[in-house]
Amino acid sequence: MNSFVNIPQPSRFRIGELFSDNNFVVPVYQRNYAWGKNEVDDFWDDLKDLVNGERSSHFFGQIVTYKNKQEDQEIIDGQQRLTTSTIFMSVIRDIAEEMYDSNFRGNNKDINLDSGDDLRDIRKQVEKAIRGKKGTKPSLTVQQVSESGESQPLQDFFFDLTNGNRKAREGRVTSEPMQNMQAAYHDMDREIRDMLKTENTLGARIDKLQAIFDLFVGNFYIVMISAPSLQDAFTIFETLNSRGKDLKASDIIKNHVMSLMGNDIADANQLWSSITDRLDNNSNRITRFIRTCWAAQHRIVSEAKLYRAVSDRVRDANQAKVFLENLDNLVALYTVLESPVTPKAHAIFFENEGITQRLDILSRMRVMLYYPIVMAMYHCGYAERDILKVVNKVLSIFIRHRTIINDGTNKLETGFSDIAKNIWSLEYNGVNDIINSMNDKLLKSDEATKASFSVLSKDGGLRGAKKWTLVYLLAELYEVHYGDLADDLYDRVFDDDRYRLVQIGTSGEVGEYQTYIGNWTILEKGLVKSEFKELGQLVDQLKKSSLKANQQLSIQLQNREWGINEIKERQETLTNDVVLIW
Image 1 (cartoon, rainbow, N blue to C red):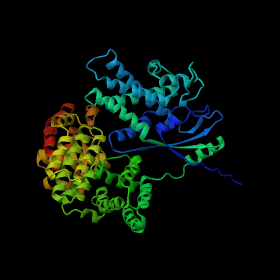
Image 2: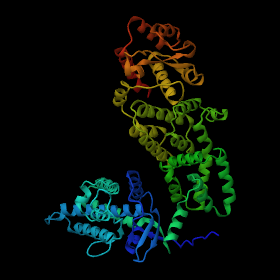
Image 3: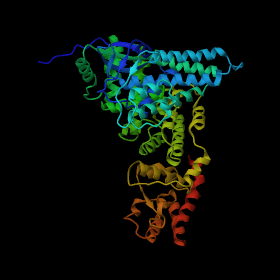
Image 4: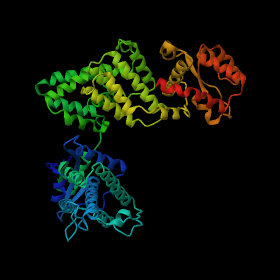
């Protein structure tokens, strides 16, 4: 017969209370400290949200303990969080100590001595939380044993690190947990110092340091379950950490929204079903949709933090109703952004064909970062001619930023979300304000764009985003430089898929220049029967092309060899057109 553990009522603590009311011990059978940069960065990001006023509190997780015979709380689950917390508080104390030494020792008369008292107070508050000096027991004791190859036990190192020992911070250690502790210390030290640099006066920096400490100890919450026996503690740990199928953010968000609806829950559930049916009831797709809507209204957040962001702002039935109504209003548009021309209903969603064509080009290049901007404009009732102007600007920004200069997408994702949020909140006075803001904040300079294009290399391909990106670049360049395609560009290049990418020089003589833009052209598929084994075969087909760019290229190839200099020269002739198009 199965025996069931009786889980004690959890206690909810602020971090400050947790450390002041307990002595924690990491048993020798627990794994060592293992948090790396990703986990420490997440920790700091959560605290930074509080400092910046994005949120008022943070749930830091759960810990499971067993109170041993010495009245210490043996940590069964949660030692990584508690160890990181102790290191973090010690960083704050050390920065306060350094600020005091450099500004107040020597009794500089120009310095406000009250600020020195404030720094001493910060140091005392941290030492009270960490403890371990003057005969007191540390609030956290890690494993007492020595690591292989280390003469110093881990607890001794941890004590030194969290009690101001410079050698522990800077000295060479070989054991992984000590290295992890050192790295966590330095990562958090750097983040705090960077935040303090944003303040212009010493007093403001001291206030900011105090605020960081206060928000951590007062607004980070932990749920603690102290089990009556060690066996119960293990059972609770296994129960809380058992894994079935992970819930997606959309599933948890639905739960939260429905919990707020009271008597209107039936109608709310019906509306939710109507929304999710259009997304094929796919949890991943629903989550991406909600995340995009959230980015259009507020700010971009990771999927891992989406539920928390929604639950922080959607707190009552009225807010839940508005949340659902916004989702319902935008879900049809979202499906169009995902697939602009199929099914047919998507192709006629916008009356302005130019929008549909531009969205299709972006879709073929697998660009999705801009969705929040279009959704915000649609929500606010902008005219389609204005939406087209902004989508054209999105395309220019993406081509310059990502395709030509090859910068990362993080800045674009955040930047597009910021623009969308301002649109949603009606901060712009018309479409020209939107365009100007995008130019100021996101558009790469002409000089940087031309410099990167002059050495731009693209792999191409027979299908997918790489193919369509290169085809689009060449089609636009040919239209501007040679007068090819003109108003038929989309119909001929994308709708009919009439052209195939062809490399001009393929011999070993061109080497890495084989994938330079200057070595590519697009040629009608009917003229590309197979691979061109000789340059003369390509010349014959280029002559038959309807594109002036290819006809001119055929003349050029007849008169001289094709090598690196020719590729560079051809690419250079197109460089000035780039900033005219995008």
